[in-house]
Length: 303
Ligand code: NAP
Image (cartoon, rainbow, N blue to C red):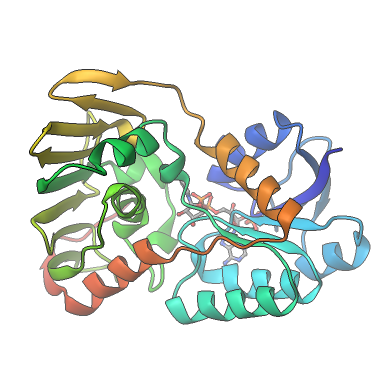
């Protein structure tokens, strides 16, 4: 039988991905939304989280598709009301608030899932398997996209806690940390921040073990989400955010977009077993890059 779920923060990603994934899933029954202005046709809509928790004790699971800044307060309210919680990426604004949520969930035997949608891209698990027995000589990440296209008018990405270009960059890091057989650490970072904004619009990161990353949010035209790994057995390339994988230019895996259906299938499994999945490694790398990063002021940015 389908489990009732409430979806919170009816904005870009909720409409583009969460609602279609939930509607297509036999595991889930989208029973309510919480959003100050957004709603989904045919679904009971609340504008206040506390009101939904009070009125709908029959909904055991809440999925939070809000930006990271307000997410902690919403997640805390849900856990205190005894609900299992699924968190969009990044799971919060700071590591401390996510650790607090994890403790709260564990104390109450509730499921808590820090989702990383890019890890569910089709090429990621085959890439992990292929790299497992290789000597990796060099890895380079190129993540260049147009912030105006993917975050139209969303000023929160440039506010403190909004992460700037690490909002998409953390997707690349979620893949990197999934496919590498051993951990790496940030050694240095260069953060390009528009003079009228608080968070970077471009960044170049150097990790240990010859891993480098180039992030840019000013890319117009074709968008690039690529990870290339040179090894003793050839060069593995993940393109399109991990959807496609090739070895020495020969396509191995290509597929359409199944990331959000897979996230919700994973959440269904976690709820069935009362488990939690809270890998914060991608967030640790972002935090370290922000701590170590050399700051460079670049030209102002306006949507
Ligand atoms: P968004 O459209 O700006 O925000 C989602 C909704 O959250 C808004 O429509 C708004 O709904 C609510 N909200 C915004 N600020 C709020 C606040 N301060 N307090 C309470 N509610 C607030 O953002 P999004 O692009 O969907 O991104 C949401 C999350 O998904 C982010 O963590 C992002 O990293 C992640 N994500 C985004 C994309 C993408 O392509 N955009 C892709 C994958 C993941 P109401 O005004 O109706 O309350």
